[in-house]
Image (tube, rainbow, N blue to C red; front, side, top):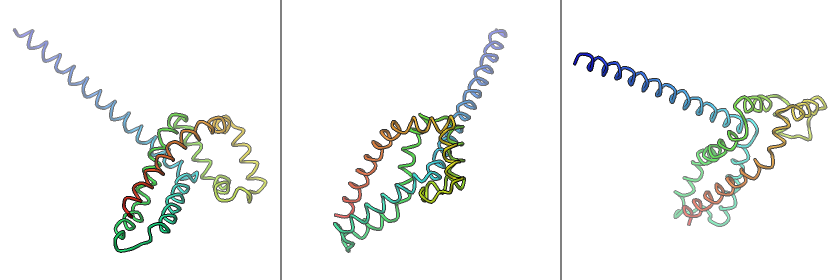
Length: 182
């Protein structure tokens, strides 16, 4: 009888330790995924992607102002749309994260982000035509690197996947806006 209880206590300890290890591993993996997602979002901010969607959101609102001028009957809709711009753009960025995670390693996203933090990366985003010769050389060196070549190779497939997501986001945004402004 004593051996049976002893064996059960041992099994229970092993089970408890196993569960604790599983929880720790799951928590660590989840935390790493969250960090990777945050790093991709930072990249999308640095490379100008978020700005493009902010611009698209503003463009949609401008277009809708002609169709649905601000009036008492749609005032709440306009308030909602104006106040929720960043929420909508952040939702779009969240939709793009898995696309980049599928095609790039975490270390590559970090290097890509680092490039866009440089003066050359910023100038590329702001006005490519105003790049200095040194910046053009730095850009060429970036695209000649192993990572740069991968970025170029992935452009077509990224464009296709991002285009589908963008179309859905735009359509949903338009439908929401129209339903709020009618």
